[in-house]
Amino acid sequence: MNIQVDLTESNNVLEGFIGGEIDAHTAPVLRGKLETYQNHQGLKAELDLSDVNYMDSTGLGVFVAFYKSINSNGGHVKLKGLSARLKRLFDITGLGDIMDIESAEKVGTSMRPFDYVEMRVPAKSQYVGVARLTISGLASRVGFSFDDIEDLKIAASEAVTNAVQHAYAEDEQGEVVIGCALYEDKIEIMVADHGKSFNFEETKAKVGPYHDQEEGAFLREGGLGLYLIETLMDEVKVHHQEGVTIFMTKHVEGEQVEKDVETVSS
Image (tube, rainbow, N blue to C red; front, side):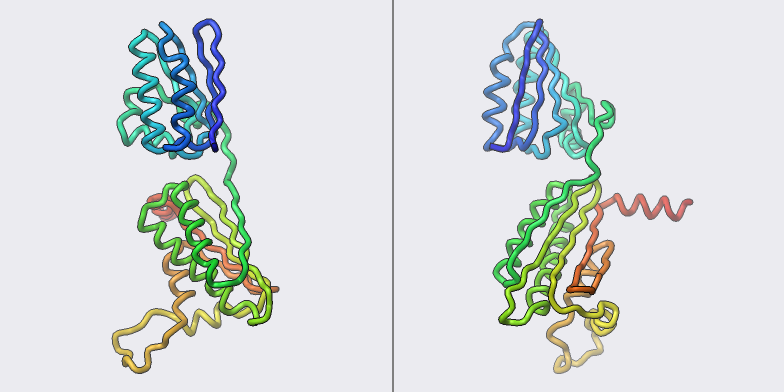
């Protein structure tokens, strides 16, 4: 189980540290441990959630139940160290106005600049879907909208497919490296191979969207992958030495707009 719950009670003060993921699978563990203390009269509970990296409505329900029990017995519950994403979950459900919640910024918790996840897959088409699903799951953790996650899946699939189809010879046992850096407000994706290189700018000049003036018989059947990557991602860089490495950046909706406004204003 990907959850850590450490609770210590002394002089009717409960201090707790909770980390990991709180979902339908792990919430019963957390609920069981909290229930040990919920009937204490006048209990002062302070729970540190700074290492909770995921929580859904099941987890919210656990904290609501604990809050109600402690509050009805004349006690107090304080949640501290919440990340911006976790705090937002409490705010959009209205719990932020009811419960005593302190975000990580207020308590001065220093969060790592980013988390990095890397996977290596054989350069075979059956592994493109594996990479796509992994990136989809990681993007949801950052807080992307459904539409943005779909864009990320397409762009990542195009980059991995490009490596699978063009980097290695048929009899060559190649691999594709996919790295993801997860920030508070963006995701950076790297797709790299060690096969044949190509000139990105030259290739890009030959591809692009279709035009309504084109005759159906002359519509090309390929060449849209790089165009889609550039269109769907906010930033794209390509290195083509000792293979091809594509760097793609996508900002959480609203974050890039704010930065652009700041740039124009300054």
